[in-house]
Image 1 (tube, rainbow, N blue to C red):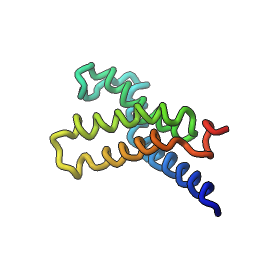
Image 2: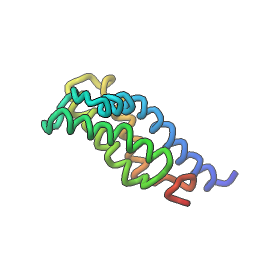
Image 3: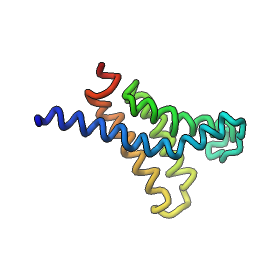
Image 4: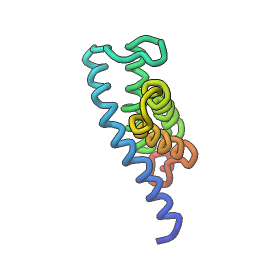
Length: 125
């Protein structure tokens, strides 16, 4: 296999697998939102309902779009911002081990912003 094919397979894996894992965090929040239960933390001081809505965008909607590779770089931005809030505000006072998962997701989303989706995406069709 040539380097270009391996690079594009790597970008697809980097895009799809972390986003699938992120959905396990976002789907319960999405269910909460559509059921009308707006009890949620308010880490930015904008209210529980707007905070929940933004978390759903960053942890559910954006990862779905990243998985299919649609507007990938753009939608990775709210996912990355959500992880910044999770790591540095929600878990700001917690030990590193607690914020580590949010930081790992942040790294994945920043790399996606920098490198794009690769050939195997809607963006490249």
